[in-house]
Structure formats: structure tokens, C-alpha cells
Image (cartoon, rainbow, N blue to C red; front, side, top):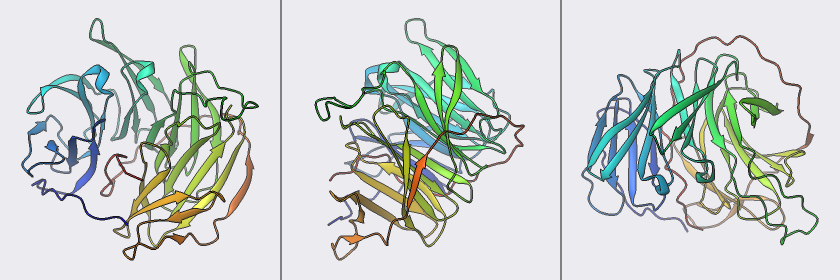
Length: 346
């Protein structure tokens, strides 16, 4: 049974597009079309601890860095900027870094696993992806770009976990190299792509073709030691697809989780990677869990009864397509309201 734990009146002056809890689940960041980012205590009163103003347009998304780097938050906006904020206390925030090298709206940001350092991936409507890396000793930032990552625009980005599956679960499993950085992206070309860092550049490793409309969100599941990897993708075509692979990420299969009543805007995994939250244009947030038979079950009906998704369809093994690049046109991606960062309980 899922029940409402807490409700916060953000007092934003326009639509709230995203909300994210920090690593400990204590601080909540929200962002809005009013151009502001607000910080709240998730378990106390409803008053904002801080209001961060630096964008000149709707703010689409926020992302917290791992606490080993301090209290750091990134925000991205229609104004083409990414701002990285740092706080000394929950009420005192300063601008740590501002990145403005995109030609159109920046739609998504995601911090890398802490094993890779303080690194942020940014997805833009100009069709490119930026990777921002901080030298924490000197406080300097370096930026690399993946040009023409998606035709028309990139809507979403997510990092592959750094932790390799533990061979103790499967002695036959091949443990992947934890030093290899990977990200998954979704775009207006209806594709889902996996990118791998190769020396000083990023190369396309896999391309998935299953959605028939814009891919609005992607989420790589946290690693809990099992010899497999999962990615959830959400699309304007009303489908959520779960992509599953073996330990070395060479073979992928896809399962349609469900066909929803409207476009699906966001997907978000729990911290243990066993529950998936989905939100969309139907104004609902649904929670899904995979059972031991590999079937995805919705677990948050009001009655408390777990109901199985209708006949999930399985696609054959997905093989990588050869990489190609094409000129991308600009488009602005107006996100709908998003669900909070994955601090869900089982």
C-alpha cells in the first residue's frame, strides 16, 4: 500500500517541472517555469529554506551531486544555461559554475557516479550532449561535447552505474570494466543511444529503435550487484520500455512495461533499483515492480492490490547499429511536471 507521506506548497509562481531529493532524502530541490530553484526540508515545514535565482527562463530539471563533494546542485534551463550551485548551509547557496555553451534549451542534467569524480552530463535541444568535469583540487572545469547526438534535440540523459555486478551471484558472469564511463540518452529522433568514453572522445556503442515518438526520459537502474543491467525509457508514444542486458552490456532485450493513456514524461528508479516510478500526461504516478517470473506488476493502486501489466510484449535481442551523425535542428523541449528523485521505499 502506498500512502501520501508529505505535501509541500512550493509557492512557485508557475508550473513545477521537476523535484529531486538529495542523497539522504532530507533536502528537496524544485524548479519551475518561474525561473527559480527552491530548496526545502523534506520532513519539516513547507517554507523554502532558499530560493536560487540565476536563470532567465523556465528551469526544466535539477540534479544533486554525491555528498562526498559537498552540497552541490545543478540546474538546467530554456535559457541555454547550466548552473552548478554549492551551499555551506541549507539556507546559504552560491553559484559555483555556469556553463552557457549550448545553442538551445538545456533539457536534462545528471551527475556521474562519484567514482568518476565531480562530472555532469547535460542534454540540449541543439542536438548535443556536454560532459562537464571538475578538477576539485583547483576548482576548474573542463567541457567536452558529443555533437549531433540526436537529430532535432536531446531530451534526457542518465549515467551507467560505476559498480560492476558481483561475480559471486553468477560465477559465469563477466565483470565489466568499472573504469569505462557510459551514458544513455533519449531524443527527438525517437532513438535511445548508449555512449561510451573512448580516450578523449565519446562514441556511440548501442542504438535502440523501439519508440515511435520522442523519447522524453531515460533512467539507468542502480547496480545492486546482480549480473545484469536495466534501462527504462519513456516516450511520447505512451510506452515505457525496459531494456535489459547481460553483465558485459553486449546483448540487450526489450520489454514494453505498459501502454499508458497519455504521453509518458518521466521514469525514476528506487535507490535499490527494484521499483520504477512513472509519471505522464494522464496526471498519475504509478509504481512498478518486477516479480520472480520477470513480469512487471503495478503496486500502487488505491485498493492496495497488485495488478499485473497487460501482456508485456517482448522484443528480440537488440544488436547495436553502426554509429552515424547528422545535422540537428533546434527545438525547445517543454517538459511536463516530473516526479521526485528516486528515494522510494519497497
